[in-house]
Length: 121
Image (cartoon, rainbow, N blue to C red; front, side, top):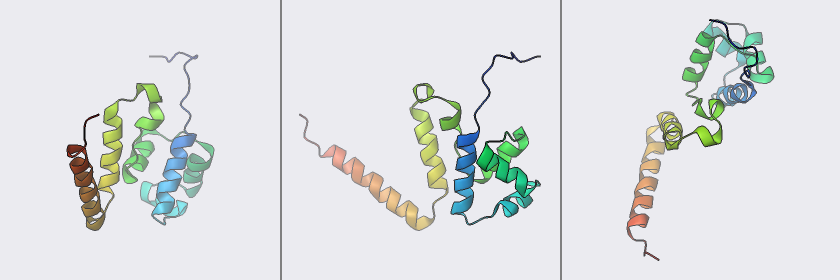
């Protein structure tokens, strides 16, 4: 099946920057990530800095390795539903340690309690 030549090609720059940010937050080098995914550091550099399109397998490895939610890159704001926010929060929660999770739980409980004590206008 042939794709229509007029189709819009996905701009990978934003996702490349998200990969770069996640990598840097972990203190990993491009060479280390390249070794983990079986590619060259030049490939990782081009994805991060030039928005080069990776193969699907490499794309999947990178976004799962760094817990990157891709909804924000694939869907325009008006196309996203409330579930994408929950997915993003899940990704963030999955990356937290136990102490951070305790803080998040207390924060959520605080919001819930504040909502219960609100006086209706």
